[in-house]
Each structure stands twice: as C-alpha cells, then as structure tokens.
Length: 315
Image 1: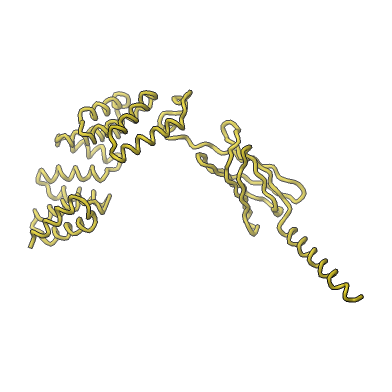
Image 2 (image 1 turned 90 degrees about the horizontal axis):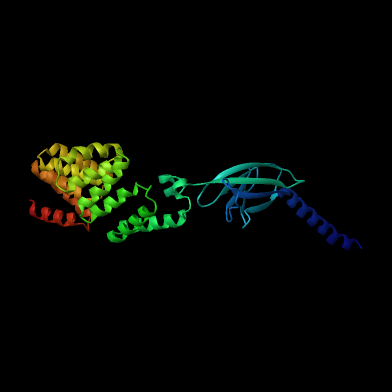
C-alpha cells in the first residue's frame, strides 16, 4: 500500500515543476501589426524582435501577409518591439505587458526614398513605376562599371527621355561619352546640366577633367578648384600631378602624386611617377623603392612592367 504513494507523489512533483516553469516564462502576449506609415498598408515579411532587459531572452517573429504578428510567453513589464523591413527605416515601439490580457501594438515604418525619389522628388515620378526605373538605372550603372559603354549610354538616355527632370544623370551620360573618347559629346552633356544648374559642382569638375584629357592644361587650375570642393579623386590628383610634372614643378608633382597614392595605396600610376620624380632628383635608391612598390602592389598593371624594366636598368 505504501509503494503506491511513490509514483503519485512523483507525478504531482512533475506537474508542479512544469507549471512553475511555464509560470516563470510568462503568459503575456503581444498582438501587433507592422504597417506602412504613409498609407497604413501591411508590410508582409517584416522582421520583429521583442526585448526586455529584465527578461532572459528576446522573442522573434515575422509579419504575415496582413502585416500581423503575435508573440507569446512574455513576463509582465515594459517590452520594446523592434520592426524592420527592406526599403524601410527600422522603428521601435514600447508595449506594457500584463499576464491577464494581450497587448495590441502597431508599428509604422517609414519608407526609405529611392535613389530617383531623392534625386527628383516623388512628384516627378507620379504615374510611373519607380521600381522598374530603379532597375533600369542599376542596369545602366552595371554596364558603365563593366565598360559596356554603348549599353550604358542607351540605358541612361532612355531614362532621361522618360524623366527629363533627372538632369543629374547627364553627368553619367557625359562620363560615358568621355570614356569612349568622344570629348565633345561629353562636354555637350555637362553643358546641358549646367544650363539648368549653373553652380553644379559635379558638372563643373567633369568639364575640367574632360578639358584636361583633351590636352587643355589651363583646365588644371579649374579642376583643382572644383575637385577641392568635392573631395578630389585619385585620378584628379594624379592628373594634376602630371600637369605639374610636365611644367617642371617636381615638388608640386610629388605632393600631388603622394596624395593620389594615399587615396589608393596599391594604384601603380602615382607610385611609378614618384619613382620618376626621384630619378629626376638623382635619388636612385628612392626611385627603386617606389618601383618595387609598383611591382608588389599593382603586379598586373602596365606600370608594373615599366617598373620592372626600370629596376633592371638601374644600378
């Protein structure tokens, strides 16, 4: 008779332990929704994290097609609901949780303006498909970066034809023409933009770069002024160094080549020219050091071949 008490007591202990664990975890819940701040449209797939510094763990959920989510097992206290979704700025809200009732929370996310919206405003895109235009722009940019100039030019031109207000894109049109060696067409594109925005620093800098590429050394001062306002690129600094080197100003050339190299320490062009400056100054060991940097840092470049030849010729 006494043996029968053992399993009964054990079972009662297990039930009490499970109940205690469940009670310790909490019975509170949050019933929420993640909505677009502009029109209250649901945001399916939004990621939700619910946190409380006093709790042992955080809880994660994903919003359904209706933007809704539910989180169970919360202890009493103030919980923070973090919500995020692609294309939106992450937002948080607080929710006081009690064990007796579910807490309803709505989190509204602000949409991040697209590149086109930032450039020309949402009004200029009215009646158009911004997502499709964004894809077209990305495709044109990829073509440009992969040096498929005709494809890039066709893409940029098509977007400009559809959205003439996107005048900033004329910089990329001009850059594409310049990459093809059509300097006059490049200048014409920049001039179209400057006719609309006479103080456009980017267009002014590109005009100076193009004129310098055409051999107009007087453009160097204008480029230096324009680039200073934008943050000069490695190419800007190198080209200005070339002008100084050609005029015999070795100190100025060396300064500009060093600044160019600081932007991209592995780029061989300024390092090679720093070696040439050292040779002109009679510093053979200094020249050899720069040539070695070209060979090790930019091994597959034409400059590496030149540096190797120079090293072989030097004592």
